[in-house]
Image (cartoon, rainbow, N blue to C red; front, side, top):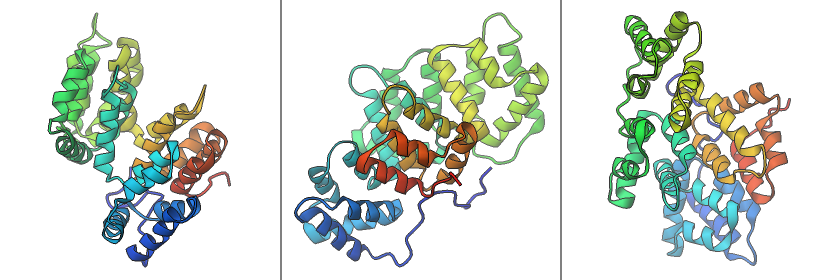
Length: 324
């Protein structure tokens, strides 16, 4: 478990940071003949999001234009989307990804599941605030129109950001709740989904880790296996994602990255979202889990599955190659 304040991100504050110098480099890269992608990439991947926000402000003061507008006018495709993601505040980026997942025909549930299962209560609250500022509506209001059934109840429970934040563990309560889950699923005919939703969406992460241990002691199998045998569809996907994040968010996200690169075509949007949003949180742990799970470094997987300037940005954000 990562200690509070212990930095496991691949991107750290640039020492001797000078926003004016960075703005001059970016202007030259954008305003000259053709675009100097190399310098764009070096500046934007070599600064933290906080530093990039200072650059955005200084850029607008110097040019009268926003850096976002200039990047959108000067670059294209997945490369453009990735650069714009880098200069977007994290909560706003999460908010925009949720909007993208629920607008248009059909809902991209895999994106909603990934975001709400892997974010802390603090991140969900920041995302909700950003959503309200962006749309003028509560995120729970819009989600309520998009999702339904027990899956909808569970997703809304997460979106409300009511997960307990305490770090202390009550072993007695964990034993009781493991028994509640066992009796609501494995032990009875039919499943009482509401018990699973309540416990998995509201208890603290350390408390849930203990529940998982106690559950295995009672039932002889993991809670993940029980969920998979008792449930189906999107509710199963969401509850399994929560259990995986309780065990290890980096391992869950490493699995998502692998999924985004295997099979027909690469899911560029998913790769960008995970790599950008975790670059200052736990990217080093995600890289380690990826290597452990797939006997291949994330660096080499990205090298073989992505291309062009988009690939260069991802590799820079991820940091070093773990092949050695």
